[in-house]
Each structure stands twice: as C-alpha cells, then as structure tokens.
Length: 254
Image 1 (tube, rainbow, N blue to C red):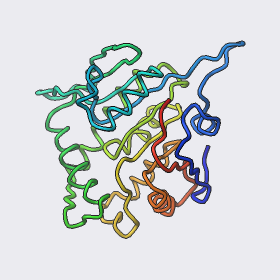
Image 2: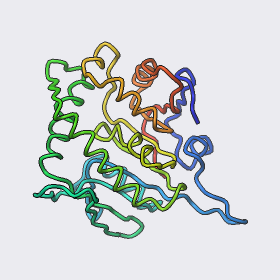
Image 3: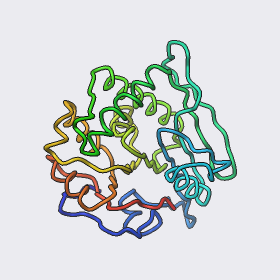
C-alpha cells in the first residue's frame, strides 16, 4: 500500500492484528482452504536482546521480546562475537530457539562493524537526526561500511526467510538501507521499518552527502513508523514520489 504524504495513518493503538494494519503489511494470515495460517513475524535490529533475561535489556529489546514471545517468530541481529579475519561472503549465523522465539546471531567483521556502528550510525546519523550538526562526522569509509554491513544483514536475512509470506519488521537508523538491499536480492516480502529517534528537517538532512539515497532507501519499505506527527510530516515533505504508509507512534507487533 503506497500513500501520499497527506494520507497519513494516525492511530497509536493499532496493532499488526488490526484490520488496517493487516492491509498495510499485506495481511496477517494466509488462507489455506478453511484454515488461516498466521504469517511468521521476522524482526531485525542491530543487536539481539537476551531473550532468556529481558529484565536486563533496553526498551526496544523488551518490546520485541514480548511481541515475539506471544506471537512467535524470528529475530535477526548482530552477534556479540566478531570475525577476526577477512570476512567471507557467506553469512556466519548461529541459530537458537527459546520457546516460540528463534534468534539468528550474525557474526560480522570487527573493523567493518566498528566503522558502521561507531562511525556512520553513531558519528553521522545519530547527531544529524538529533539536530547536532556540530557533532556530525561524515567520512567515506563510514558510509562504505554502513552499506556493507546492511548488505551482509540482507544476505543473511534472505537465506532465513521461509517465503514471501514472512512479515519483516526492521528497527532503527542502523538499518535504513536494509529494505533496498533486500529488494536487490529479489525479496518481495512486506517490510516495515520504525525509526526510534527523531527525523531531521530538510535544511539539516542535506548535511549528509547521501541524504537523497537515504530517502530512496526508506521508500523501499511498505510501512515506515516515526515517533511523532512532526517527524511524519518532515519525512513526507522530503519524498519526491509516493511514499509508504506512514505511521505515527510505535506499532505493537502482536
């Protein structure tokens, strides 16, 4: 479902199980004969939470963990371990199941991950999206690593999807290009994205040379969620073509 910026869904209480949200994400269940088969929920975030002890986790991990514990599904994130050698093109993934939740820990090369996380994500995007141009540090090697790590996430996820019926929900600024990378690999699943930090206005966003590419990346998602109505308006105003369905507030994945 693609809608213009002025066609904004504004209902904080909607869930994936609600009729409008089912339509936006392509439906909650597939009908097979007289029986409805729930679509599998696949969550992607920069890091995995400790699903065995969510009391020690942050708000994002707790929210994802609770949703997956109730609904079931797969959670993909970077492993706490790194590759100390030249990275292979093939993803190195460790799978674990706890109750209804299956986690996929993706092992990444340390130097590349550091440039992606400490570099582009937290030295470029984080201050930029928080209106702190004085703190923005934009380097070509940061951007290259950011794109490379997102490509690694996409390749790993593409191999884990069980088909076009999986619902994919991507979280936060670390993974803005993920949908675009998945589309390049031929993935046609419905993909949603939620940004857990503010979105900058145009006069600040242009401070990063790849701002147009980032907007194009967001347009590869079927649903994009922001924290506030202001952020929705700002993001929609910067799109030069029809945008995904824009959501205000976090959509509960259950």
